[in-house]
Image (tube, rainbow, N blue to C red):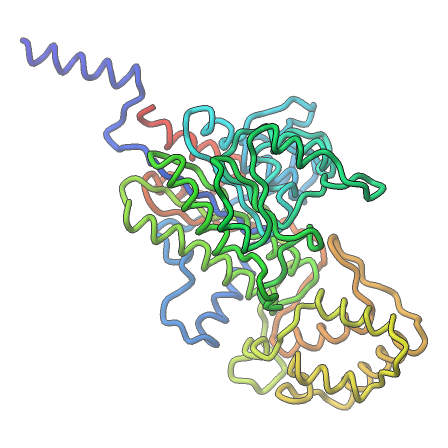
Length: 464
């Protein structure tokens, strides 16, 4: 009789406190590849397998749970990053352009906010602006994603332990004058540090790590190998170290590979692949932590939307592994476009032979990658129109503008590699969902993007 009463009491306690036979994770990692639809992942895996000769698939593809998610917003079948970030952070659909709000402008908490209020350490990091749409959706509420000053004020007052990104759009006003954001950060006990060298200066419990004051929109592409620049694996490692110090018992970390989206908007296949591999390396940092705490850790990987409508198709070249042409690419399309803009500003003569040499050394064209006479003539015509006639219609994308010569160069490069794009914008294609660790089975079914934060929250609250 006594045993029966004891068991009944335990059952009641379980019902009241939500205790489950399966423990909740203490450490939660949420990886979001911006623009990283299913096809970009598969193209990166093809490069990983056929060019790098790795016997194992990309780490995310080795996770025991692999599913997909839909991404439409409340206002359109094709979402933007603000609405998608809000869905992934709060579990609510909203209108494109809105951050942390429902379509009728009601503020809704993100899971990061809920975790912080419940005593977790919280980190939010990205390879693009720290106040860009996706990271902002985890700490801010704004009717428009580009209200950077207001969003930065909310970052300062969030109480989060670690925020990192390329820069902050609210550090200057519309006239380019400095704002009081650094002072507000200091008032709220947030230490601002800059660049990889600034990591060693961290001595506060609340930190915001930024790249530099020039490239506020992203930390630079992996393929450009910018000396001393922050990179996503380093940022992830730094955030984990910090969270383990200030909140060793439990923490939540969101990691966004924002540069994947920038490269896909540019239709830069080589840069996009290298960014996905870089994202995979950042994921490795969390996975190594998981192997030490397998029963206490959950890792979820997804994307906010697909960008570019990228596909890997049969190449017209004779390369056994066509994607290997990207091994000769040493500069991103954005970096090459900046190089071209610099040429347009200089007074020294710069002819086709000079450009042909540059293309061979930095993109492999003509040297390792054959270029037909017809294709070379098209390049020469585009070069003449751009640099001699100064008559070119730019290709405008969300984050950059490319002259017709740069567009033609990278069209040839993509054609040789067998990578094609259907748009420079977002698409409605499905995005992947990978998961491993405590509660990962909950993601096995097809998902809507709003399902993911709700599932994460449910798993985390099993015994709270």
